[in-house]
Length: 177
Image (cartoon, rainbow, N blue to C red; front, side):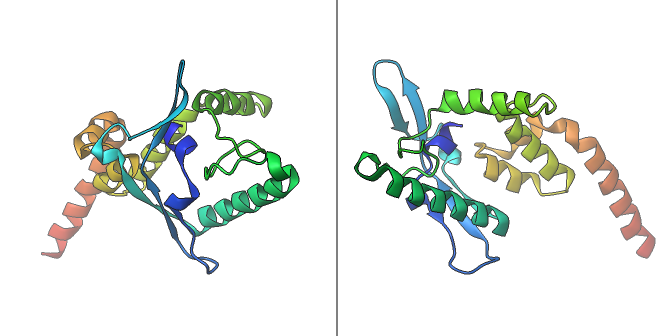
């Protein structure tokens, strides 16, 4: 949530053409510090600074966010604050990470969705990627883990099914030999 709150348009590459993939760079985190307000800081680790590939649908969603933000800028006129953040309040001020968590919980409750926390989306992303046989190193890099060991230790519950796939793949290779 702190990385999402700190994401700025200058760190997002949205290609001009439709159906193309984009990139975003995670280069900071936004924290609320008592007595100091919102403070941009370096990510937790060097591995947390990373580039993330965006699917064409994500690129389209970010374009829509940008379009909405431009309309809000026009609507607010001189009250608009051009902070450069991707995700803002309608007046351009950045979102507060704690509020992102609360708002997400409210959405889950309002739509009677199964219990899921905002941070749980991160775990769901990693679990689904690993279950689809995305290499753990790639998942680790996308999550910003300092090493693939952290990813493997955290998501080892996903690995038994991957072990089955390995056993069958080796068996098929040996059959051909």
